[in-house]
Image (cartoon, rainbow, N blue to C red; front, side):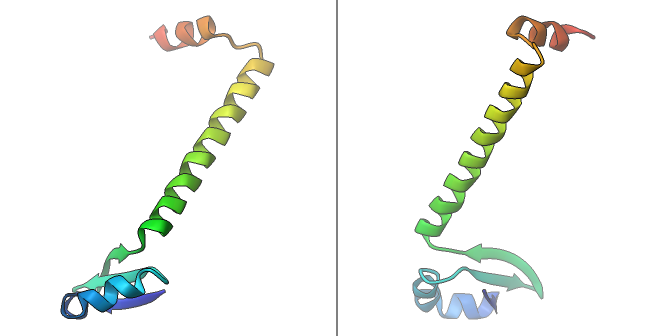
Length: 82
């Protein structure tokens, strides 16, 4: 992944956007990493992966809760304890 400073990114925005179709580019501001430019395709892939991972976790937790005998009523009771 290439890293460029903010001034270079501003000066070469067209080239930056073209390159971002091939690889993410880190933009530095005042020597610190500030942002990443990436293609919409890559963004959607990452977003999809995150959603898939969340759903797998949710299903795993639901399976474990079910195997442990935890019901919806039991969850409500636990949430209302306080």
